[in-house]
Length: 452
Image (cartoon, rainbow, N blue to C red; front, side, top):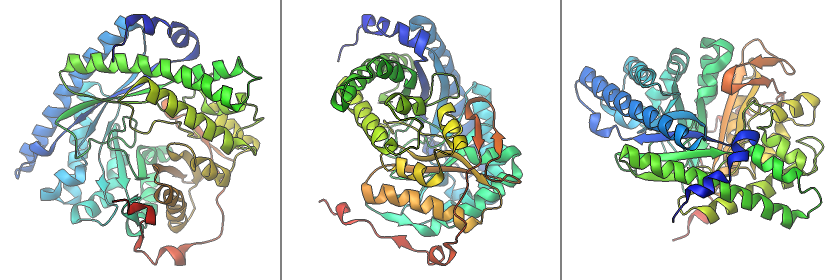
């Protein structure tokens, strides 16, 4: 596919007025060949691999920002799931030391976040997986840039409740060890996790990938909102077509930058993730797009239909523009990172139950929401299990990034700062599911998994 420079200039007003940007350039790096029985030699190889390539990424990305005038907000790295490469060194202290090494390498390279400190445990857990989960409170509270994930289910494997049952306690520990529970914001638990996701905290370098790959995450909720507001009288079919055409242009711009950056780095180009990703900046809110459809406040009845329409149009526009669309590709609905979502929660229009309903049609799940710090660990596990069951049964990616904040109750506000914004603490159903969760085991895969 030929992409002309002229097409990029069509997006000038989007960049200047509507917050269009390349949200992240994420290089996936294979670390399996760094494994060494000598742990200190292993750490040195990992540090050198990440820091040297990270510096190249930052340098080349900055050149393209100047060339095309499109902001590249984040330069990031994802690595081989750490539980795989740490199997010869599956000791709590060594997981913490490896996290510190990875964090230092990212800092030395000028990388914003580095993802992949996690495990694939949809059918069971190895000793390395269990030690990693046990070490996460120290890892997430003791590092600045390291992000972690667990994939605990898929439509083919079902849902690993034994793994989920370890997460509630881990998150409460992490919250206590980090200021404002910020360590929890760097952890996400998935079902059907895509291996080419460029966004944090869930990015990791897939086991089916080569040594390096470049994945691009673009965003443009402000752009989409602007065209929706200009077309208030069209029906849903017309509205979908307008969004589709807009996302087509956004995706073409992202692919041009991605392919040129990959060529400069001399690595394969992977995918463009076309997710609409919110920030706290004015005009950069997915919730405001939903409200521009005609919903008075996100969370009102009709919001699920609106998100479904938006999701479908975004995917169609991206698929029309590129043969390399991947990752999550849809729309995020984080609470703390979206000014409209924050306002919806504070006004009472949006509660946890409705937020879960919206995730049945969005591309991610329950994202960046705060709950009281005295919630029982079993309740946290149940919130996670409910959300991930949606993904297993419907063969879609769902994830949870929940932040239990010590000392806070429903209605309080927690300030995270920067990209992570602020979160109103959401009320949680007070009744227990502990007896159900302690059964453990695995939710069987749905019958749709038998497609061969």
